[in-house]
Image 1 (cartoon, helix red, strand yellow):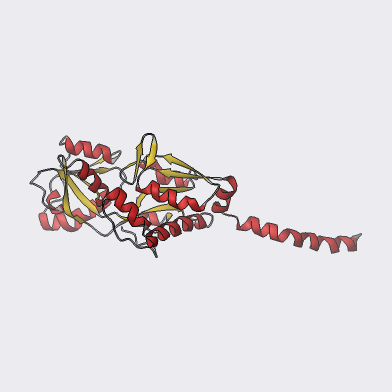
Image 2: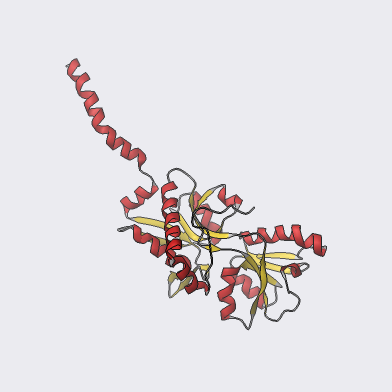
Length: 283
C-alpha cells in the first residue's frame, strides 16, 4: 500500500497542475468575464465627455466605452455616476473595476494608478465672460479671482503657471483660487461675477462656448504644458490585463479613424493624440 501510495500521489498531483496553473493565472479581466459584469466609475458632470441626458450617461467617453466593450461579449457594463472626488479613492479601495472618466495624466496619479493611452488632449485654457476686455491672455489672470473644480489638475497647472510666469512677469499671482464641487458650479459663478475667470481643459470649453457664446468666451492660446485625458485602473498585476484591454481598444479606435469621428461628433473638432504609448505625466 505504501508503494501504491507513492506511485499514485505524483500522478494525482500532476493531474492538478494545469488546473492550479490556470487558477494562478486568473486575473481581474478573467474574473469579469466569468461573472459577466464589469463595474465602471464615471463622473457624469463633465460635458461633453460624460454627462446625463434623459437619465442616461452619454458623451464622447461613453461612445468610446461602448465601442471597446463590444470585445467583451456576454459582459454587462455597470456604469456608476460618481462625484469626481470619490473616483480614484473608490478605485483604490476596490469599489470599481475600472475608471472610464476623463483623467488628466499627472505624475501623482501615475505613481498610484495605471493609465491607458489618451483619447483627447487636455490643454488648459481660460474661460472669461464674453466681452471682458481685462483678460486678453492667460497672463491677465494676475490679480484676479479664478475658479475651477476641487481636486482637478487644472488647479495645479494654474499654480505652476502662477509661479513660473505670472509672478516673475507680472509681479503677482492670482488674487484667489476658488474650488467648486464641479465645473457647472464654476461656470455659474463666472456668469454671476463671483469669479473673474475659470480654468478648464480646452476640449471641455469649446462646446460650452458654442452653446453660450453670448455669456462665455475662450482666451486663446491655452497655457501650461501639453496634457492629455485617459482612463485608469489599479496599478497591480491583477489589473494589468484589464488596463491593457482598454488601452488597446482606444489605440485601435485611434488608428482606425473612429476616435477622430467621435471627437468631431462631441467636440466639434479632431485632435491628434498618441496611440503607441502613454505620454509622460505632468507634475
